[in-house]
Image (cartoon, rainbow, N blue to C red):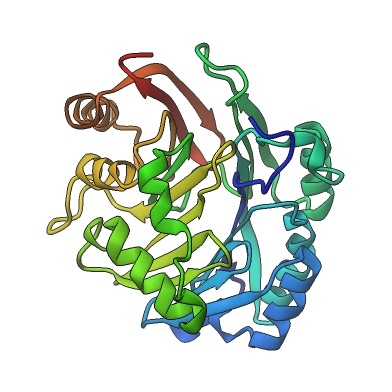
Length: 347
């Protein structure tokens, strides 16, 4: 393990809002009306910038210098890696939403365990301190609050940290969010995310498209429009846009601290979309990591144990990954989180 390197594990923040005075149908753009200059100022506080963007009828997707930002009419998702100051975005985003007549309904902050925890600035050196900062940034109306550290028995150093706050005891979110964190990537597969000789002649967009194709990322969801970006000399980010569904991948390929993440939002019961276990299998197969963790957040939908078991069976059958730990926790007004840890059977 390297003494120090780039921190791949992201911090993730999700803010959900509702309209005070009228149905959102009267203001269908909602948060998407926030101007780019204002968003850029928020990101400057976080210490990252927009490097690429795409939008459709449902939401706006930004690839950042450190991960991703998604803006829906009543929801913002921002995840940042490295030593970024993500929690500095909470107050200004709430303020910008208030100017549009939107009030904060729920907040979720989550992250894995950092590879280089001592390199993080305050308050990210301690989850307790992070929770204090989040709570101080939120209005008192979000009265249903809970912080949890979900620690797998097989690998205590790979815990999942979650804080939620909600104005309602029942969740209003119908989307299931799946977050996959992968470490110790296969060295051959990781090579796809290094710029090759001659790539300096191409821009980061064209180099990103080449990485998308060579790695097989374009096969994870063939229906998604992919906005990708290649970093110099290595590293990769992409946002996938498929109707009202997003997906995102971020890769730190350097040996010794290699890391990749895959995240998507979906509904388990929509017709016409693939089984989540198949999507996860394809995403993980791109990287063939030695350690995998999957955090699945069931918002308004009830926890589905069969889905959890189906993921475990398929990853074992197709990729030889054995589930070593499964933890479940419930969050008032914010649903259920299931955290699974996998390693190859040979371990």
